[in-house]
Length: 311
Image (cartoon, rainbow, N blue to C red; front, side, top):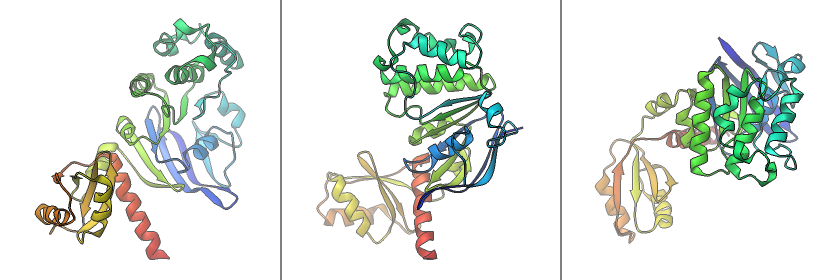
């Protein structure tokens, strides 16, 4: 069964095209991720799906309800957590939760089982002002408030941005538990490693979806040979790899550069000799398996080439 359906969505802000012909479907009970950098169009898309703004063209439904015509009914079954912390910072943890429960005509006690695993972690601080919480605690409070009315669909816009690694892991563990309760979850994130925690993901850039698939399928579809290249000078390495005749792509990844050759004639010894001639030391070139981020970068490179050819 389909929980969310979007068909040919467009949205402009003046001369900026935020969404450019977006279409996708999310199955009922699915954990679906939108993966892309800031400015890719994720927040605009989520605001349309949660009835906060109107699309310029296209159609979207959530649980069979039109996001424009049925917005009142739709809001009662949605849980929305925006990217920026938007709860009342001058209210306590407990007061925020009671307030949002009252808006939907329910109580904390009525749906406590749904938020229990999350709320028990912040309950010791229930008398603390929300504005005084840490980043991870704020996110847990925001998620509790989004769930307190027992929504059918949960929409989370970059919920782990700005929180520590431990809190990020805990948050995703919570989402997996919510998924087992049958809640449809769509989540956006700029963190590529979080893509592998979703059932399916849409890779989005410049308001367009480049690919939709399971994370393992996206990696499996990556056909190029991939190498991690390290030397004593990473910055110079990036510049020199751009000059190497056999380079297809070269992107920095932490302390190394992920490199793909133009074709199968590539030899590691040739690259090592090339870098040695340019005074690099401690040269290390190893073949590696791709990540979702590598796949994303490859798709972006293809998109860039296609646009140059079209122009």
